[in-house]
Amino acid sequence: MTVNGQNFDFALLQKEPVLTSLVQQLGLNPERVAIELNGELINRSQYATTTVSDRDAIEIIHYVGGG
Image (cartoon, rainbow, N blue to C red; front, side):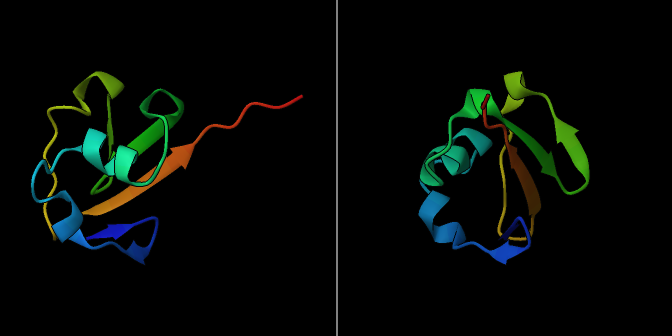
C-alpha cells in the first residue's frame, strides 16, 4: 500500500482495514482530511466503511487552519 507516494505497512491495519483506522494510525483528525483511494475521492461519511488493501494507492490531504 502507498500513502502519499510512500510505502505504508498494511500489517498495521489488518485488524481493522478501513480508512478511519489509517487516518488514526497516521495521527490525523478524520474531520480535517480529504482522501483519494485509487484515484477516487472518498466521501468523509464513508471513511469508516471503506476497506483498504495492500494494493491500494491512497492520497491524503490534511487541512491546517491558520491566520
